[in-house]
Image (tube, rainbow, N blue to C red; front, side, top):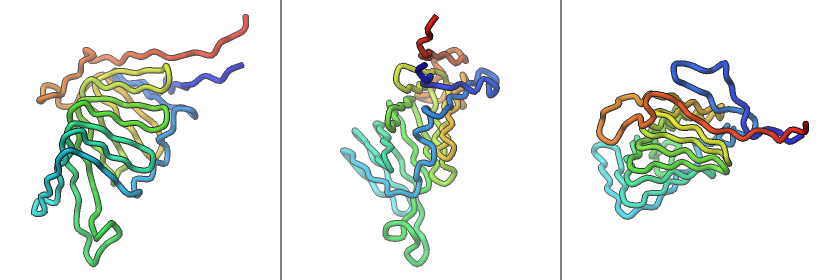
Length: 186
């Protein structure tokens, strides 16, 4: 008997919410948020007084096998006293991405209009027309939260801040999905 690709936690159904979890679906579990963050882009603007970097144009950020692509990203950092633990005493706290945001690791892909990667809490929150795919399995909704510690991803139909520029639920407040099932012998 072939093992199913996705195990749903139906007990986690909330208001228009669905949890996407299971042994095979947890490639993001225990992601190393302390790994170096590398990026490429068409343009970079360093705003030292504001402790941020703005990168734009075909932006790609890579960390420990995970890739984040977007049109534009703002990287918030802080300078560590006495050199700190980061490169040259700089520690990245948060990455805000907008414009066709795509997060990939192994066979999982998450897409949305906007994403916030909080490196301290190890959470990626995506808003607006979100989709989460693994192989032939797919979930769509308004908001997606990926917990990089547990590997659990939660999709719900509401996009926080709906109506904000570039952020719309796109799914009418509902979550929809398609899942493959194991082939059974009659």
